[in-house]
Amino acid sequence: MAYSEKVIDHYQNPRNVGSFGASSDVKERKDVGVGIVGAPECGDVMQLQIKVGDDGVIEDAKFKCFGCGSAIASSSLATEWIKGKSVDEALEIKNTRIVEELSLPPVKIHCSVLAEDSIRTAIEDYKKKNGQPVAAEAGHGHAH
Amino acid sequence: MNLPIYMDNASTTRTDPRVVEAMLPYFTETYGNSASRNHAFGWGAEAGVDRAREQAASLIGAGPKEIVWTSGATESNNLAIKGAALMYAKAPMGSEGRGHIITCIIEHKAVLDPCKRLEREGFDVTYLEPGSDGIVTADLVRAAIRDDTILVTIMWANNEIGTINDIPSIGAVCREHGVVFHTDATQWVGKMPTDVERDNVDLLSWSGHKIYGPGGVGALYVRRRRPRVRLQAMIDGGGHERGMRSGTLNVPGIVGFGAACEICENEMESERERLLALRLKLENELKGLMDVVEVNGHSERRLPHLTNISFGFVEGESLMMGIKDIACSSGSACTSASLEPSYVLKGLGLGDELAHSSLRLSLGRWSTEEEVDFAIKEIHQAVEHLRALSPLYDLHNEGIDITKIVWQSH
Image (tube, rainbow over all chains, first blue to last red; front, side, top):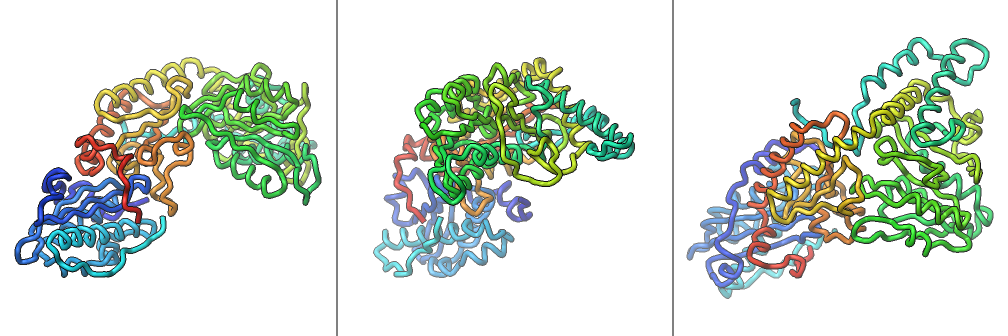
């Protein structure tokens, strides 16, 4: 299968790789939200960490991803897009925009869904840690 | 060294130029129909086919009259399995209990799918489960044989992991119980010594394009004596191939198949030693360079030229992206809609994350040490790049067993 140039670029030069510390440390930090979605048996696991300022703006984002090139590109792109946005603005990012930006074929749409899920999960984690109400919107239940 | 390098010889092989040369006159000069008995064009074509039949038979220790030409190993498997099941069925079409067939869960789909069809048509099928080493033993087969067993079909060597089953012993068990024994030997014949008499095989499938011959041509060995095996034809027509497979013969393809068999027979011994040394180098150096690198399947009972390696915490398809100058296969089926990893690796009981993390590298006649060195370097770099991105590798390094984590299913 041929990948788009943008997917290849994110694969070769992933943006914002890393984390804000070991999993046990970031668990305690109120300014960091963590989203881990997917499962190894499905072939993708995405980990997104966001660092949020007092003003509710995402100052920094880091990702790690076990998955195909499209999954890596989707999560790398997600970190670029959410940086500088408020948490509520970041929640507006829909997977369809990731599909368009990266020209993902139909079999790779789940990668973009996973990226959207990771953004929402990280923000929910941040909100819960800070006693903020979490939107009641249910997660995407997509069958594997 | 030209890039990309080819390490996917278990998928298909480059046609040997000597084979192409042998085929060429049969397109433009000796182009008759081998069934035309009344002119020189036909006689010439028939002579070419007869010679190929001898070359093919010689490679497997059979007689030339025991070779049936087909379009490839998939057709050979279909003819052997469905043809034998229908010939030896214990009850007519439309009834249940038509007979019992034994196969294995890690067979090629060209064996499993015909078995599934027969299951829907009133036959019972037992799917044996090999151990984690991927080997089907004679004891497993013996334990599964019933009074109504009519056919056992077990591959000689596995196409994904290269493990070698004990075909002579399985054949002996079948013989003892009077059960027809078929083996899909697509990955085995031409690479390893084969003798259908010594090895107790009744039906054997193989293919031209896996042995440096042309695509679109295959053969089925059908035993003619002690015991004589009969098959119901799948393709009816002019009664070619002793009524078992009608259709005008693909003369240039068959001539190429024969030439490929002869070259394999002559060069097998030195080729397998050379390829085994290269494969061991590939495996040992990759294991030496990185942690959590597992070679899948039995450690020794494997084909010399094929290896299937899992690189922990790295997803196979992304790994393939990182080694774009190496043509090979991945055990991850992420490109398919199912997201299921290889059923063969899962059949070994390999954890899904390792099944998603595998590469199949298969060497061939033109593989060089320089290419193997290049592959080692490229794979090492790509795995390191992806492990730097992998949340699973972090967890592993933090001492967390990822198989014990309850993942948020989505």
